Image 1 (spheres, rainbow, N blue to C red):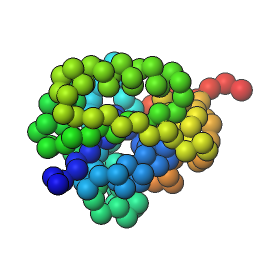
Image 2: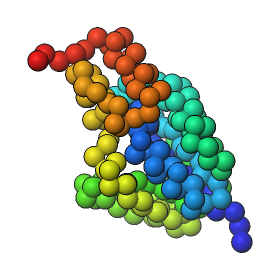
Image 3: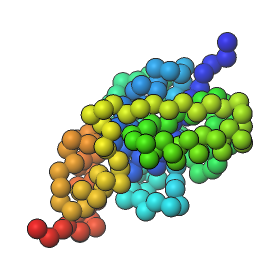
Length: 170
C-alpha cells in the first residue's frame, strides 16, 4: 500500500484553535499531512504569507505532531496536491454554509483529478464558531480573542492591531 499523503490548505490568517483541531485530527488519518499555506486574492490578509507560514510552523511544532509539514503555495490546489504526491485533501467544516462552498470545491477538484479525494472533518463543537475573519474583526475592535487562538497568536494579532491602529468606539 502506498503512503497516504494529505493536504490541509488554507490562508491561516491567523491560525486558530479550530485549525489546530483539524490539523491534529487530520494527522491521524494520513501518513503525512502537509499544511498548505496559500494566498487568496479574494481575502485581505492581516499577515503576509511569510508571517502566516512562520505562525503555522510554530503552532504545528507546539502541537507535537511528527507527521506534519508546512509548505507554502500559490497555485491551483489540485496541482499543488499532485506535486506533493497527495491523494487526500482535508477540509474542516464549521457549519452548513461551509459545507455548500466546500462541496462545490470538492466537486470541481474531483473533475480536475479523480484520484484525489476530499475528506471533510467537522470542527469540534466547542470550536465551530471560530473563523479567522471573525477573530481579526474582534481584535480590530478591541475584543478579547483568547478563547479562539493560542497565546502566541494572540500576541502577534495584538501587535498587528496596534500597528494598524483601529479600535472601535464604545
